[in-house]
Structures are given as structure tokens and as C-alpha cells.
Image (cartoon, rainbow, N blue to C red):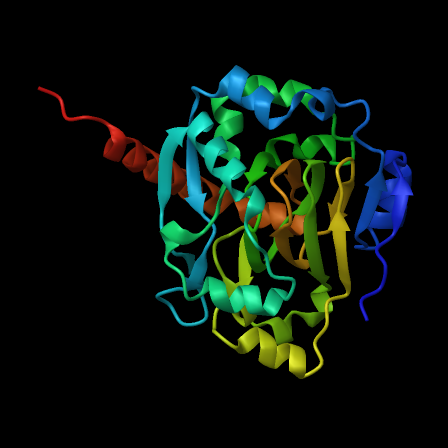
Length: 296
């Protein structure tokens, strides 16, 4: 049986580093978002009325095996749309039936086309509306000298959105503002059994969720998540670097996160970060051109 994840009040930076970051221990800080302007402002209705006309990039949430053996890649591309249109899709998801068996969900994902998969809004919303950053109050846990090696995203997800099993090469503070998400966490010591399939410099997918039936076979062999829990509104999750995770959205959800790279990961970021960022910009530009009417 998975163990219960620790749930504690927000702590000082020194306490956080000593008790959680250095130990590589996930924890949920409860009541941590009370003083955030986003906690009261960021509703679906507010986003529609204040920012509904903003153009955003929506990406497919489905991954498959890559061209090189043992690697992974995204399946599908990006769509450009107005935020209000995307919020209509999120609202329509409210009555969708959802599975409780995440192995079954992983298998069904692999039988779908990218356009059938629920989507997420990631960094593009913060780029389009930079003032949103003023509404969040992440605790000062990331080293100040790493300020340029941090990244935030706003995640607006329909009910039923499923993130395949993966690990990030960064620490993660994940703030759940509305809706509920189920998380399964696997410790770094389980990496070999999870068959890492590199995606890019920042993340690896697990081969367990890239082949139909693989997840069920691995579960049958005795592999179990270390934690299996629901992240509730007002919760702030600390997910240490290299912890594997699946995420299943149980209700239309708004969340925001902060990644920061530790020293070993930071050393690797420089040579490849620019190339990845350029690729994402080009993909967004292409999606925008696809929507533009012909001139003349």
C-alpha cells in the first residue's frame, strides 16, 4: 500500500531545505495559498471576463516512443486559440465519466489520436498575460542565484486530463488553486523498473506508459507507487527533482507551478536550453500561421 504523504503547514526556508529539499522528500504544505491574490481571483469566470480574448497555445498531452531507440517524443502538436474558446472545452468536460484505474487510463490514452486528448495550457498564458505573476506568492525556497533558472506555468485542465508517468529534472512547487488532481509518485530508486525514455533536457517519460499493457504487467510484478493522493484546492505540493509522477485531473482545474534546477541539473541546462526554447517558439509560430487568413 502507498504510504501517506506528509501534510504540514508552511515552514521557513531553512526548515524547508533541512527537512524536505536535502532529504528529497515530497510534502504537501496545507493552507499555503491563503494570502495569494490568485486564490480569490483566478476562477474560470474571471479568466473569461478579463482575458478571454487572449491568444494562447494549447499543446497535446500525449507522448509516444521517439525515433531513436529508448527515447520519447510528443505525439501531436500545438493549437492556437482564444482563451475563452479553450475555457468552453474545459467547461464541457465537467460531466465526462472518468476511470479510477490509472493503468487502464494509460492504455486507453495510447489508442487515441492527439486531437482526442484533453489539453493543458502551460507557459503560453504567462507569456500572454505577464501580470498574472503578480497574483502568486511562492515561498522563497529556490536559491536566489538560480533566479534565471526557474520557470512557471499556469495549468488549466479539463476533467479527465491524464499526464503519463514521467520525471522532471527540476524541483517543483505545485499550487492547486481550484479543482482536484490525483497524483501517483514513484521514488527515484524505482527508476530502472520504470524504463526511462528521455524526452528532452528537462524530462524523461516512463516506458511503462508508452506500451499498451506495460503498466499493468509492471504493476502485477509488484511495482507500486510510493504515494497515491488527491491534491486539494489550497494545497502546495513540493515534488523533488527526479521523482516520477502521474497526474489525473478529477475536476476542471486551475493550478500554477514553479520549477527550479538544482546545481547538477543547472550545469546541464545551458548547452541545450536555448535550442529547446527556440524549437517551442517555432512550433508556436507555425500554429499561429495555420490560423492566419491568407492575405491579398
